[in-house]
Amino acid sequence: MDLENQNRVKSMTEKYGAENIIVLFGAAEAEAAGLAAETVTNGDPTFAGSLAGVQLGLRVYHVVEPEFKEAVDGEVYEEQIGMMEMVLDVDEIVEEMKSMREQFCKY
View (tube, rainbow, N blue to C red):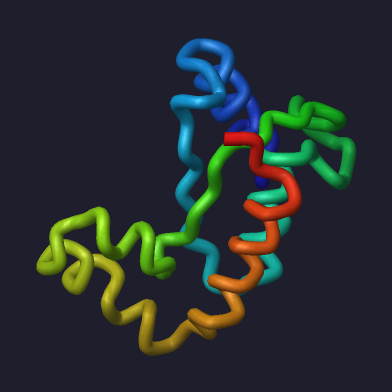
């Protein structure tokens, strides 16, 4: 997660409260999604950004996870994300995100 996005997430969390924030990812690979999720839950593992050592514990999901898919209009989902599901390793992404939530999410 780049430094600008870390600053945005931190600022929004301070403004609205961590319990009111959900971070949604769309990375094409489970590892990339997991790294970004770790950044906003447990702190920047590279210690390079504003979230270095900051454990926000935010809720994190990927756009291909069932929880997100069920929460949005089916037609919009198919139009915007449906093609991604066919080319991504959805099971691997779901497992990675689930692992991040179990380890680091506080809300």
